[in-house]
Image 1 (cartoon, rainbow, N blue to C red):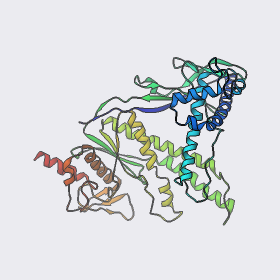
Image 2 (spheres, rainbow, N blue to C red):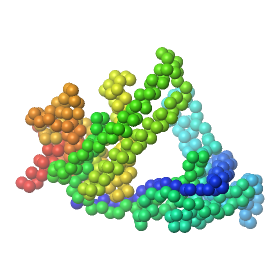
Image 3 (tube, helix red, strand yellow):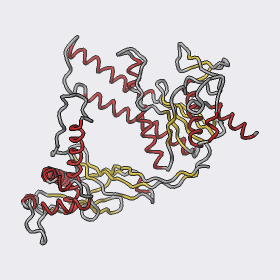
Image 4 (cartoon, one colour):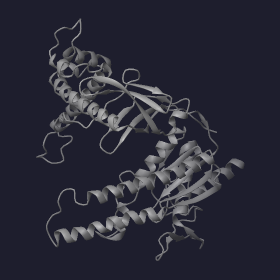
Length: 451
């Protein structure tokens, strides 16, 4: 058994608020004055960046406050007009705005240095980055000074009326479940408000519990015909669970919308010409939301399977940087490759599984589908149905299922880090032993261990 060392993770929940009409006006004024204050600060921080850039977090806050805030010990700050313009601006809001301005300027300076050195230039005539003082930021709320939580039903927030700062109590109507976990620590939330939405973005410092996992892994093959093929394999090579996850209805909804884009484009520009910026942006946004939904549903199911079998790890193919080679330009196959959610599903699965103290590992993707899991050699794909294959023994098998079992074998060998795994070989397949391992290699190891 392998014990996973706990890691520290930051995750964010969305707490929906139900403000009255009067409170919506107050929230709007608060966000507006906070953004104005941040714009002032960006210019000041940029002007004095040679002095402020090398200071740590707490020291930079004090240094900026000495420039803008009038106190008994600092009666004549250099930019004292800010205190008059933003009368009674709360100290906690001020410090949150200072940190935002410092981050904005620091990001700009880094990008500018990279542009100067040529590291970030894709073209010789690439223009330098610009410092954006006008940011769409939202106020960060510090406990006590900016908000007071009354259970999980109401929250008291300090807001701006246009002339003064007052407290107002608003109802919390929607919660997630991270606050119910005792080890999770609530950090400073942000007030997200605009014409359509009003909620708190609440980050949590999650501390996963130590896990003592069973001797099995969950292997996932991400495919085109089937979104995800999941196999649970024990360390001795026994397959104890198989499952195909495919949300065809959602994929059809997405593809139908994307197909309408080409029709509208041909009607708009005819045989030549160019499309205007933002063409069909709403359609692309909806398709992106469908992709996110599919990825969340699939990743959630993968994590449920891993939790059910108390898996030591979830194993994926390493597909980073992979580019589609098959399919003619503008063909249906090329469009299906563009809709392949290999990265989203893997990332969302890792985020969910890490919160439970699990581990996600990547293995070499080469020959996972091409080599038979039983060690008989290279499989022969069906010409009419590419999802099926024929093994050297004549057995018909699902290609994605074959691949997921090989992925599991490589994950187990990487997880156990056996010294003798370097000596694995298969004369029949002629593959490289460690990188191109198949399920049959686990059987060989298990039999040699018994002998």
